[in-house]
Length: 168
Image 1 (cartoon, helix red, strand yellow):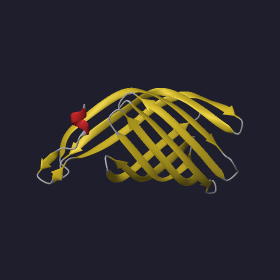
Image 2 (spheres, helix red, strand yellow):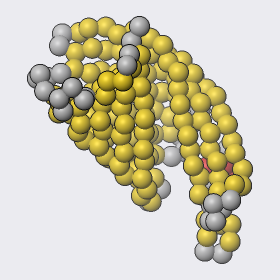
Image 3 (cartoon, rainbow, N blue to C red):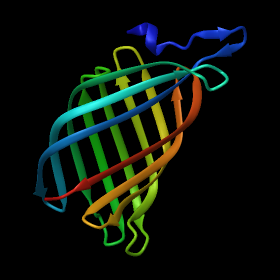
Image 4 (cartoon, helix red, strand yellow):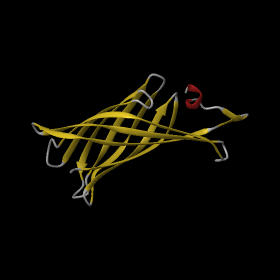
């Protein structure tokens, strides 16, 4: 699998680009602890990596399905702030992922603030820093959108993440 994760020279001076899309479907339980809530979830995760040449022509695609477990902690230290910490382990890339975020309430539109995350696997490490907009109310769902800079193998690039949850 290391062949897939490495960038290869397509033409002299040009490298292929890899677009990674990931998703998971988790079920679990939330437990109130003091002023916070601990969520324990498990389920499946999916990943698709698509490689493109320097001219945006499709080269190949690779799909994987695996298992994922995730722990989430969130609390509102004050009426206008949000604090979250997340840890997940997945089998697709044999990685552990963690995230911490703080946010300030923006009316009835959720919370916005900084986030830091890292994904560590047996072959790689990705560090991210950016901004999140969490607990966006959308019908029965709560959404989170985040984006910023990702650092991997000495290179920087942009990341965008979208997640949602539905509480039964």
